[in-house]
Length: 166
Ligand code: FES
Image (cartoon, rainbow, N blue to C red):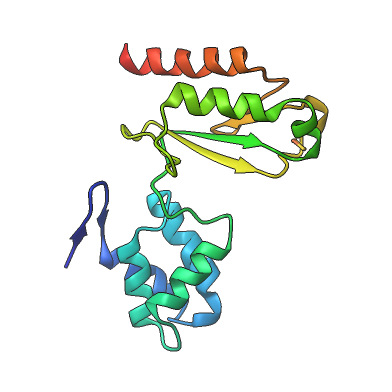
């Protein structure tokens, strides 16, 4: 049986394959969730429920609890462009807050949402990107953009938006 929400069709046979690989062992829950996230770029609710109902010693609530505890897991679909904004100490003192505000304004993100409605952009705030000498830094799909300013980041995002419309 397959289940659909607004953006994702969960293929339960793929989830079963992952569970089989880890022998339905609850001690491998983190690895299982990592693989499911690699498949969908986030953790669909249906997948978490399925895992909770089919692995002995787990429940949907415990799976959901683990998924929300670890920052590496996303419960929302990620965008085609994953933007990570550093708000670690070095970036913060060099102006990451106005950069973050500029990103939110440019993306028109709804309150409490981290992915744009069209699914193109998602935003994540991280505590250090390991590029403190380049502060304030952001990363888009793995590429570091150093010494960001509100204007510079707005230009980058608007350029991507234009490319998508082209
Ligand atoms: S604090 Fe921002 S990269 Fe380290």
